[in-house]
Image (cartoon, rainbow, N blue to C red; front, side, top):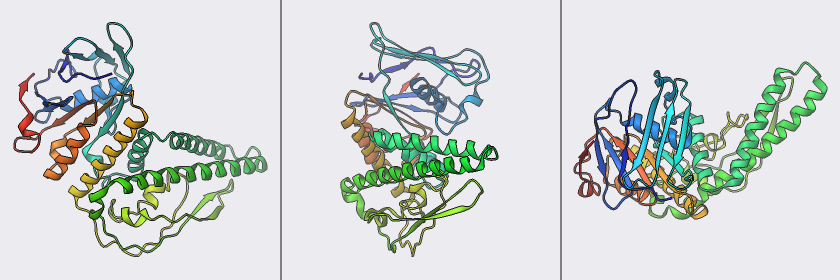
Length: 367
């Protein structure tokens, strides 16, 4: 499925009877659109609804379901060539009813990559948010084993939590089951660590000139983990990790957090406690460099997904993007991202005039 350049908002309603009043910017030679308007103009609401209609999920990081207070809020997208349209309804509970329709057949849902400014360098986000973004990129880059390991880990952790709640029924049997669940958590975690390392090894092989941005001075680090038995006693396991040459290269990406340590391994999520021995970090990337690196990782994930799933269309969504892209270097790398997707929809509250390479290829159209 190829998404059209001139997508149109069809009978678009925001909450109550508010209407959209935005600049609608088609980008020449690209399958994409930019929504430009001030605060409160409805940009993010359009992006939220578009994402929800495509995925049947709420927009990540927003309280979308709490924003709906009126019945029958309809959202629609119709293409200029009338070959397909997408419509849906969001009820007061935030549940999305979607319908892909075309004159002849049902259209396959595309893969959707999203990008949000508050996640753009994973610095101010919580560890869980960092892992969520990292997991999403690895899964969408085509690692099916990683996806299965995540599912197994989550299932085992839920099983352990439920067992602990009922541990007084049969302590001896429960201890046996708990040990099995701990082993399952441990094995799934090792698979996840391996998948994350493989993903960053792939980055190392392809990052090229960007590798010179990162300079660190770290000693080798050791990792140990603990988990609880049914009585609350914490058992200690020394984890023998293989040589990780990429650890020192990526250590400063998240500002004094080792990417091959707590952030990458996900101590809390994996139900383990980790201890990292670290000597020093000499260089911390600037905000712009972190954004640059994040764009590179997203581009790599998109290209990997394209290679493995060539039949799947890719949509890239970004909110308030030009508010964050403050250097030409950021813009150039962002340009490579949108050029490798089928369709992008981005918003900005900031005028983008004068920002190359975009300013020379944009005509303003008022909706």
